[in-house]
Length: 222
Image 1 (spheres, rainbow, N blue to C red):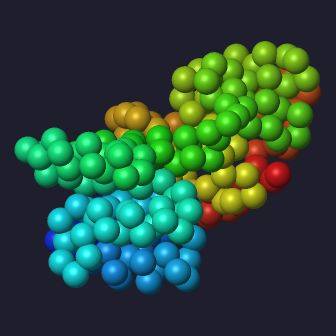
Image 2 (image 1 turned 30 degrees about the vertical axis):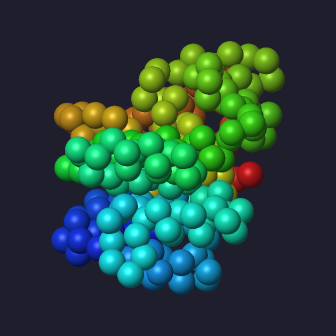
């Protein structure tokens, strides 16, 4: 997944980029709205992290121009903690979510995942692959009308992989995407969870669904 950060505070821009890259995202960095528009003209992004107050072109002006092009890329606005009007304006102009400064980087990542999921599946809560149906609203998984009983973390892993069909998802990105995963004590917890998912799918009649790419991660072929 590819994220564009538009934030004029260089240190903050660098911190956000560093954490997103660690989570397996591809990241481009711009430092004002005008520069952000130049990136938008030549690349497609899964989401944009957009600051409000910036030189040359502020976040509101950028957002206005973005939406005027009928560009529906999800936007997470970074607003001043004390200015509620910024929040109202951001949402009215088409921002998908907002985060007040100062913020926790884990919350930023969680909000990004949320707006990306909503954008990809606004009209349909179901993801389909090879006869397997994952319902994000019900948090359920079925294969050929057989309900597959997954634990919460097993479900989260499968959802991430199915949202990224035909893309190799690194182990680091999965770990970054799952809440509280870093507190697991065993270093091979992820491998065990994927093994459990595979076994449950095979018991339902679906084999070779999750493929391993050595030293890269996992992939589900569409």
